[in-house]
Length: 393
Image 1: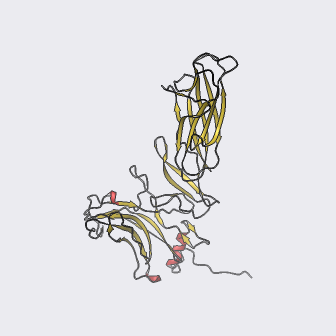
Image 2: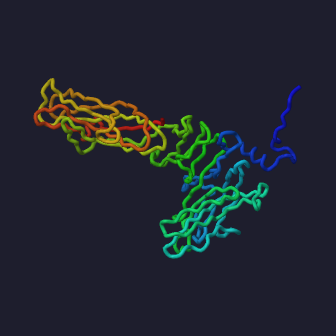
Image 3: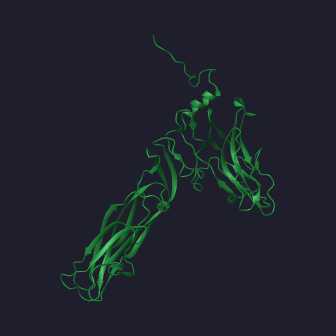
């Protein structure tokens, strides 16, 4: 005989679903964490709308009022607030709250001279069915403690109910208005399960993922694409770290048809050019290549004794870790001849943080008192460049 095991009502059986079961059912659409299913949800704002002047989504963003006063405006938007053992409370604010709203968001009198205070704007959910004094979803202002300007600290969110912070607001000495400069956006994001989560200003790059393969998206202004900030996607790996999903180009240092030469030293490297690699926020490799054009200045070279030039790429400093090097022999035998040195792409070891890539060269042949130089004078057939690509590790 078949055995049957009763389950919680499927959503939605008439008159059978409790509020808690409904939260758990709806919560299946949102990211979960913890050691077991239905134990922990990611709280935060659900990003949906950005504008040309706001590359970061504006859902539930706190701004100054159109006419600044001792209050703020709050944009509409949706949110998820997890409460341990109770599942996720999912809600929304339908219309903007501002100074002309029926219940505007305002602050108490500002601190006196020499004093400042940090207040927090938050969303709080209360549930009388599990012991709270009331049943409510509300915007609250959590007052900070006034302190000498510069030493004020944010207050602690209330432990009653469940809360998510949206913004910190600095109330200065004798302040009568709140402007954008006083507002710090601390919104964290959540998303529909298995979909990319767009990071908001309150999200830290170090915040862990909830499950392997989780995706997040963010602006990366230090690697602009066509001169504008780029949106990149990252995934949470089995090594419990975030990884990029596409190569980045920080730009190439290049000279052609330049006007100056760099005279090389004999048996000592001279820097020709460098590229700074900003921290992409995850581990990476670098693929580095370069080319430099050289010439001999002075008397005619002795046949069979062409000058030799070392060309190399290093990390961090002129004498740092060598990525790539090559000795360049010249075939010409008369003064003023040019020759090209080439370093084909090579990949570095795994890197983290920011670094600098340097292209340098040295002369290793001494011919009388003649100097050898890296030529930036722009011979039509030659170019000097250093190209670097960031490859996610």
